[in-house]
Amino acid sequence: ISIKKTVDMKFGNVAVNANAGTVVLSSEGTRTASGGVTLPATSGTFAAAEFTIAGAENYTYSITLPSTPTTVTTGTDNMTVTAFTSNPAGTGTLTGGTQTLKVGATLNVGAKQAAGKYTSATPFTVTVNYN
Image 1 (cartoon, one colour):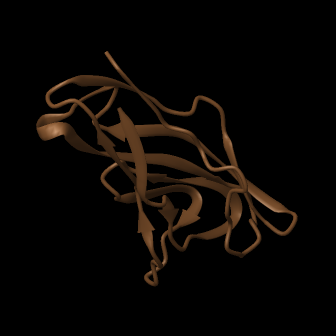
Image 2 (image 1 turned 45 degrees about the vertical axis):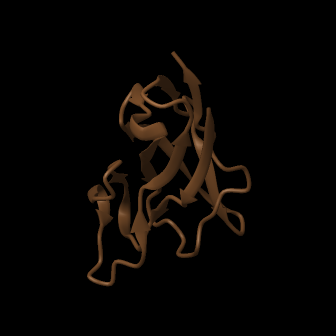
């Protein structure tokens, strides 16, 4: 079984006021904001991460997502990415020998978070294993 990332996870543009909040990026690529975070009209690029899983036709596989936060930074400022979700969730089936796995997560935005392009020096890990 193999896994290859085809699309990077991107949360797009977000705006924050004096209160902390979150942006939930679903595994289907839709966003919702809460707390002091809003989603501006100029959304920027946002997308769930996508992976191509390949292996023996019609076999099932288990999906393991990160259980610890991933830190994203710009300069000395940082945020965390948590609560990873996937579609399919938990188990996938290699119909025709391949399947697309989509991964979303929650971006935790601090109060008055500094503007910038936040990236991760150590990308998150998704593991797949045959059942």
